[in-house]
Image (cartoon, rainbow, N blue to C red; front, side, top):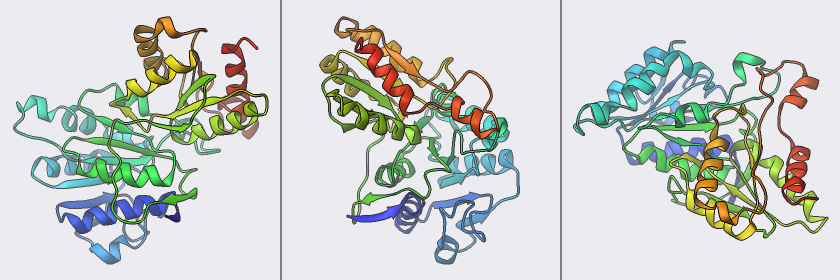
Length: 325
């Protein structure tokens, strides 16, 4: 094992895959000369050159469309959005072309492309730069949606995403790029659609993903001091979702709390809730609790932002609620 930053894990995954397959290239704003807005492509221009690490104009619709057409013609592009908030400018290409072309062409065309970049809040970036888009993209058939929470998962999942023959939305966080973690030496891949039990427990299941899962870890440590054992499941892939791992855990703990950094209406937590109540209702000893952001645009004020975001205290309250404590 070696210890590296999240951004370095992303860079290693892309570089290893580009050495393996010459049809893979990276494009996006500032990915080349500037080494990436978050330095996730540091050194890649020097190694692969300007034909495979391509700086683009500030035109998400344009370069998302170029990459989508390129993928249909045999290449495997990686598109970096400086933030998924900016992907809204290019969402027509993602939703109406990349996601649908396999079906619309009767299987004659596929679109092996990865759209990656940060999602959700990242401090004082205010309402238009703090949205979580996991459930937006997961709502579209034809897309796979991946949201890693640590460097090891990020590298293994990104390599699998790049090799996938369908379009993958790969979501990171500006606030995780500096996170350090152990990453295996040598080649390894993590399959898409497989959740991971990060912490085993018998009293309550907590399902989460992405950077907000850290709040679940903090809460679990505090709850353990009171003898409450939390089982924490990291979804890793939002779509396809690993229902079995969730259901097996709920059948053991009989209680479920879902933590997600997204607005309360129609989100990933809602889908998890539906699947559990429809397939494991008789195992539940308490109503399911879901924890989300406040149902407003993200504020700019640090004090208001702290109230808007879910935190470990919210998790502790929810766990005690389902345990009737």
